[in-house]
Amino acid sequence: QVQLVESGGGLVQAGGSLRLSCAASGSIFGINDMAWYRQAPGKQRELVASITSGGSTNYADSVKGRFTISRDNAKNTVYLQMNSLKPEDTAVYYCKLEVRDFTLRWRDYWGQGTRVTVSS
Image 1: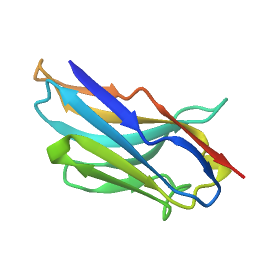
Image 2 (image 1 turned 60 degrees about the vertical axis):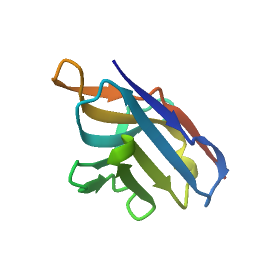
Image 3 (image 1 turned 120 degrees about the horizontal axis):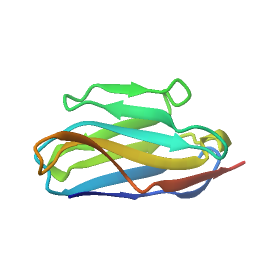
């Protein structure tokens, strides 16, 4: 089994910053891509940022220049540094990791979600 634990969400004023973390534990035999998604009320879940095992990153246009994704492979953890937050960033944020688990197969695992609320 693999567990993902997210932390770092909360309430912040527009222009503020938050740092999200997502730590994986359990029977892990490798982690490939890591990503953050978000889902705002009444909207579909969307990709915010992703990072490959080699460190290549990809961002949604709406967050480019404001958000930074990073990973610590020794800790099986992915981070999302969010700066210059806007009210439209308000959503539940989910991490997704591509993990090689005890079955030795690659599977996608999702975090439980952490709420980010940006007030104007």
